[in-house]
Image 1 (cartoon, rainbow, N blue to C red):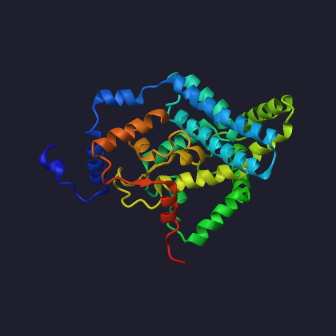
Image 2: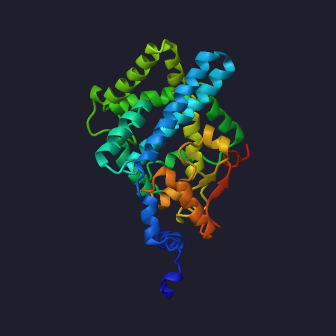
Image 3: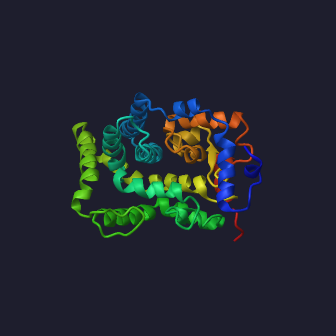
Length: 324
């Protein structure tokens, strides 16, 4: 690196470049190629684990129907619905499967459509988030601007999530998007009932599978989880990823990785979603390689001053630290 590049100016562009040089120089070209390489069997395994957890949770309620098993099932199903959204997110980056047609096909039919999202409108919106992260043009900036907030405000948000108020709001917004009546963050080029095909078909398949098994009422767990716990873990994910960033111009300090405990990975952060800083640094790294990228950067000292939290509880405490 020459002398001029070490004299970092105070402009946002130069600060971003300096941050990029700090981490990119720690990885060889061969290492990067290994990190972005697809392992299709691993993606299939992740999909199977998500759906396996959903059906195991439903089986638990079928075998022992009581408030405790229902509450646990709703939490696990909501978290795995987030897991499916994360795998759809991988598909949006073309990081789920090596074959692009298979990537989008599976990303939609087994991951996106069941939780009422879609790779097609999500991809351009999300890539804009990567290009404009933490600027006024970032389509996700509204998700992090309210933080830090007060503890009472955060509690109200959690109550709205768990009582279905957030889910109902999202239901109406998503329906408007699909019908072409929305100009929101993921507005569609063409509106109409045909955009409801994916969510309708996949949810009907799920319902009829449960009907064939003799437990059609278990489908309510899927719906209620989408309306409640899925909204909660999605909110926690959004807060942890970008809220309260100390330096929006620095790629190592405008996105957070949360080092998650085993139970947090099971109940809050599926499919490597907690390694969000690493994802922003190399956005085509598949979810199963993000822990490896984290370890490489950590062991080489790159993350010493980066935005890394230890546990989601610490992030939520920071997010609710504003005095009342």
